[in-house]
Image (tube, rainbow, N blue to C red; front, side, top):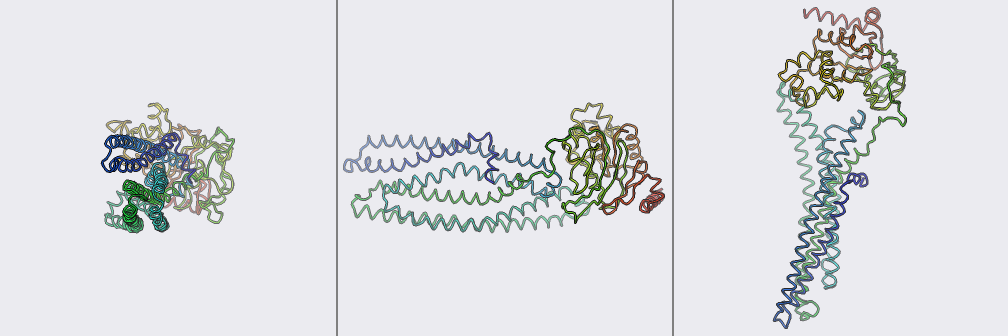
Length: 584
């Protein structure tokens, strides 16, 4: 896990190395200061038989000032380097996570919820960033201070050193108990954060439905429930973590009192022979630094406990390998738009016991139009998603242009297969920018031509800014039918060999639907077209109409053939014909 995360440091290695280096120099300066203070008191203030030595005091004071200034400089540099290194590390880590998600197949994305991925990219990365900054800065400073101060204190008085040594096991035991209890709670809390993000995301996506059904109160209750769970979990974790502070303070103040009492007795009883006043003050300074370092170490370990849960979640995404990749020696050209299903079966669970598609056999020649009908849950969308290899078949083979889709370079295959999904998505930006997702180099004339084929040019020209009209997030400022036609135009700009329309004209009227199909026949006759629809009128002119039921092809033929032989098709046709007459 550490190796995987450390790979994101990259160009910030220099700052990562310089931070602990200047921290060591800062610690050295801080360790010298108590020793110089002892010399100033014993040789300067108490020197010359108690009369004092002003030149020595001035000299030693000047040295102390230099040490303080150097300590300040090293501290500032350490903070600057640490901030640069940690912020850069977090930036790279977010980029690595985001790029990994971009490589995921639908199967990989299904494994992680959207809200969980967002939490990992934000909250979890921030926790890791804070821990990284503390590790390269405080985790070097605190142990160095602890070791050097302990050596210096022992050189002054081995007897007094036993005082703080007695408190170290107490602190270590308390810290261990806090860490072991807190870690599982923080893991649980981050999972609840995922739930909260999911609740917020779901509410914002469906805000129109929420308001139309007046369900704001229900949504408030849902959010309050998950927010309450976070509060309870966080409170429990913080209560455990909070025990560390009082324990540290108790040990620190108890240690100081005992050292002052024992040290004072040593000075009085031996006449400053075994321990001088300056040495006692110096020892107290070192003891404070030792205990402060222990507090810092405790704080670092607690931060690591919190960030460990985040690191595990982030590493889980980084370690997730895309289950759909290009082969070692891929086919780099799709010859034509022919599509053949050979005994294709598919399961989202990758198990033959839970098949969504079963023994699908279909042979489509390049340029043909294929209509696909079926009830809800009949796996129509699943079937066409296999063509562009959004999922891999579980059994059998699927060939495009005479080659198994698994033999193609992924980018080549998907550039040749344009998919207009059932859930149409437009991105924030102008209409031109959205259309050029299909072809970044498309000219304005090509944009207009594609929009005319999709019957979108007319309503676009009606906007005050035409093709420069800004599309709000998710296409909120255009209707469902307009959004569908823009997505169809975007797909046409790819000039694909296979065009898949997954119920993509459901929101347009029958006249517009017919115009779009006519444009397809006349303008892209060489493109193989798969049209999933609920209306028979949308597919009745297709070369082949496929009827799916329960993940199996139950009927296949032309409109006339199915009217004569397929009970399902006949029943659907009569119902829709009757519905059309009733509407009239």
